Amino acid sequence: SYRGVPFFRIAQWAFSKFVSLAVMVDKTLFNETLVSPPTNTRVKFTIIQTQSDRIILNWEAQKACRWIENMYELQICKDLNANTDILDAMWEESYRGEECKYDCKDLVQATRYRFRVRIFNSKGTSSWTTGEFETRQEPVQNGGSGPGYIWRQNSQEIQLCLECRADARPKDIVVDCKPLGLCVSDKGMGENKILLAGEFTKPVSHTDIAWILHHDKKDKKNKVLIVLQKQDPTSKQKDHWRSVFKSHPFIDPRFLPHGLIPGKFEVV
Image (cartoon, rainbow, N blue to C red; front, side):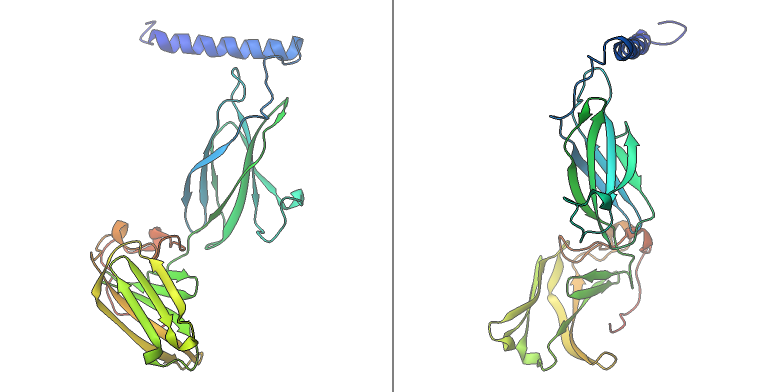
């Protein structure tokens, strides 16, 4: 070592300086013969972290050129209805640089965004890698919403609320609950139409379930209200439910209480 600096650190520093010098000379005198076009290199999105107002993107790729670091270009499209395969103008550049990570802030909650990333250098670009990711919902009564339903939670229970037809009767509604899944159907609609079905993110006590058919006087709609008992009551923020069903929208856990969630539900 030299003055307390390990030899391998010195060697690593010297090699990086040599490479930088070689690349500079190559660029100046030999038209960048050391630089390879990145056309055959593919970028892959890896860990995606989401909150209600931000999406933190991570990606990885093999080095397109042995001697220099990859440079990345990241773009975002905020209009998913746009035909982005044709309209390049719909894409906005978010980032250019060597980092394989970008924190996209100031987004709208519960909104899906499209991103694309590629490698570029003086010899060209790689093909785009595209991904769609959604910001989380800000909780309402410690719950959120999914396709065709809303949900709430306290430390003991989950409440689900879903609309049904105006002339539905209690005997028409079938609620089939198992520890890891739920199916709600309306047998009065001919072929036993499914109103809601999904696999729970956490188990429930399938024997402790209550439901009613409720007529909401405010919007004059019939609703099925279901109350489920959590198999494992939650008393810490990290344990409270983020979503009722797998692959459905998540709420942002930062807004959930750190301890118990007390209280009864309002009819929603």
